[in-house]
Image (cartoon, rainbow, N blue to C red; front, side):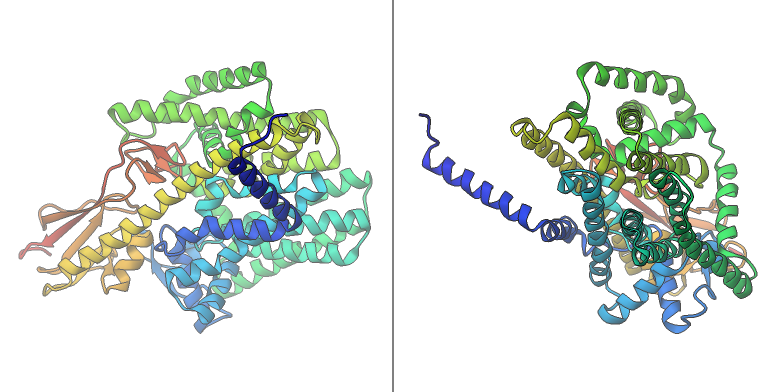
Length: 566
């Protein structure tokens, strides 16, 4: 009889022991894995929309009942905060509480945001226990996606909203199945909290109504619990209308319609971009393709994605002039590649409904498709943050599909194949999160180097651009340029970061370029670069959520005001 060598036998025993411990303590295992995945990014500088939430938190510490009663320069001029932000304030309250306890450092606040990330993963596990026999796989498939890891390394509202969303769904399903009014109340309360964290949380209301009707096959008075989040949102609308003269919910809806018209993307172009973002942001699902589908089905999905992309690609690429040369061909290839992944996600959803057609299938399918349609049609632009709510549902769909193809007796194919797919997804997701981390570091270093060079001069330092660059420039005493009211004097400096937003032309008659400061950011993979085609936070920047290729350095141009300038 064949026997393993002593070292191999020992390693096999250790692996079996690790698996056994993980199986006995799944919640602790998932919590530690989430912490391990996010630990390398705790010192990430604040970037993108992080400053809006930080400034709201600081306002809440001073005036907790008047959270948006201050002004910011976010689009090139001073505006009231209530007209700039498109999110409710609950994430700001959480930040204010965390900062009171831990301080305002990047590490402290990112550590505070590990808690909602862990809650979201554990909620996915609890929900998956209801839906499938392998809940650990479902939770890991949600955690180890680019969109989850990148979103969890910010201090924005997305991951806290997702945590409320998942646990609200858990309590609603358990409450419906057991006629437990207490759980239904907690579910309704968590829906209200999700909606006050990010308005998309309100989409849970119709989703859970459909689940209850599908499960009960009739109207039930338990549905009245969902009036609680409806009343909460109405109260918030009335309160913000009284405080600021504009309702927060209606203001966000109006902004989405305005921005879509301003950006001018056609419906077909947006559809392809949404498919590409879905495939890239949830790339871990793409790696499971060989386990999910037969060879003929895989070929059909790939061919379908190529045909769709070939038809729509010229329309999409016409919107992105900065992408040139060889990088343009590389970007087009990546669009087709990840669009195939997006088609696979939607196909997985359709297959679930086609084969099962029960209340759980309808919930998962509407969850995924509703998130996709919101990101593609109703949000102001396609972006990774809008697709984040899809991750838990997709993880459960993967587990259910694999469970059907590989029953519990298929012990050889299942662990090896699933482990390889998860490992591939984890590697890609960590690389994308690292690229986003490097971008944030480069923005902070740019601000520090600029202020070190310009801050010693006789004049003031003004700058264009926003996001993390603005946060660190203002931290060192520079002033955001107000294009309507700022009066620059001879001797002042004007600083313009190239890879940024809300940039206005500089008058060459009144300014002289002093120098360009270049800071190395991401090398061959980035989440945010128009020349590389990456626009994780807004597809207006690029048609890909992240892009492989030649990534330009982060450049900042320093201008001096000429003596005769006015």
